[in-house]
Length: 387
Ligand code: MG
Image 1 (cartoon, rainbow, N blue to C red):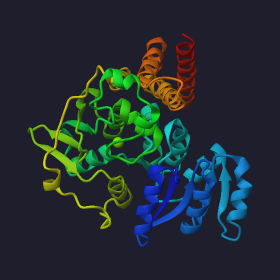
Image 2: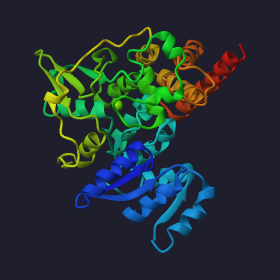
Image 3: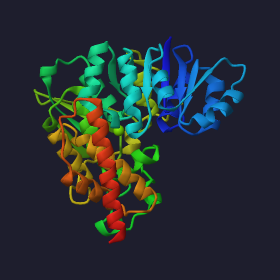
Image 4: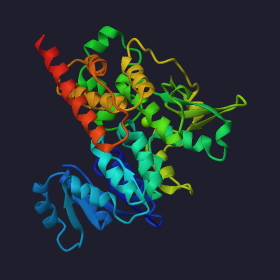
């Protein structure tokens, strides 16, 4: 039996983790659940899975949660301290499915406690890759992929010596604006940007997919997960989202991982490792029905966010943390209709152009880079709204 703590249980990945766990009660036991503000769903999950602990974002919600869970013996925690305590509980796997920079400290707490962390929350590695790896090494913890592309690469690499690897190629659907003109993108609404063609995901990552920032963040994630130099990580647009990523070996041989675009497949892999958990309820992959798979180069003109992330990856240090912070603020400003869709990469580019970067090796420095990136992005957005 694998005991699992789910950080971000009411989000898109979190709810799908619980669907996989529900399907395999003989293998997976949910021991702890942490959520933000969706109390009614958290209560429902807690009653169903009976974890030992739950944690919510706001202390003000603790009382309601305690009374809803009275008699169950489930401990209720709250705030960043509650999240950190929950992340470090004695379990076999911590699933990091929070969104954005919020996930950094609980993931560090889990690693410090020597846990294995399956990470969907890529911003953690983007902000603090070297720090995360250092904590994992120090404590005997480990970081495993829970992002579909990285789960694909993990499978393709399995059983091959490191020297055999030439490079990895991340696939991207291209998002809802793959074929849109620059003028159409300038008028794009949040509703249009949130209508992802293939994947069901939360709003932050769906907007990141539409700008292609997501692929840039995934390149940074791949660097740390697989210990790769930035120039050995490429990306290709693949609109069908059937190949989830590829690995090229030194002999010119490639391995790709295929499947329907459904997050439960990579989740089952990450949760079940080294075993495979059956998911018979999924629609089988039918290659004949799909007929053809297509590939395009990412368009750097219409999707500058991808290039910005690669630049930050090359610069290293705190540059990716600043990029991530500016992007989080800009995505929220777009969702709040304060900036246009192209305004997202414009804000990130302006912030990166004016920022100073440090080596990014300790947590205080990363927190500070995150804070400065946010402040700078807010200033850029306010200035653009005034002009
Ligand atoms: Mg992904």
